[in-house]
Length: 88
Image (cartoon, rainbow, N blue to C red; front, side, top):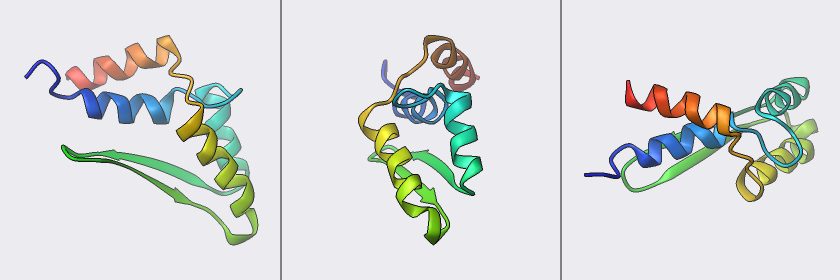
């Protein structure tokens, strides 16, 4: 019971917090500049990441996805913002 909503918070923070050397806003702009989108979905048993990308820009989009999965930054301000949204 104390961990209810934790996977949702993780999913929200993963998507909003930035990755690699990019802040959350920079990460969003990088995706937008190559015509891509990344969504993160949380369920009780799993967290799913979905990457939408143009074929021609797939290598760049995959690099950003790799950063999100392997090097998330979890910016403290964004994490707190997402925590507040999760508690609503």
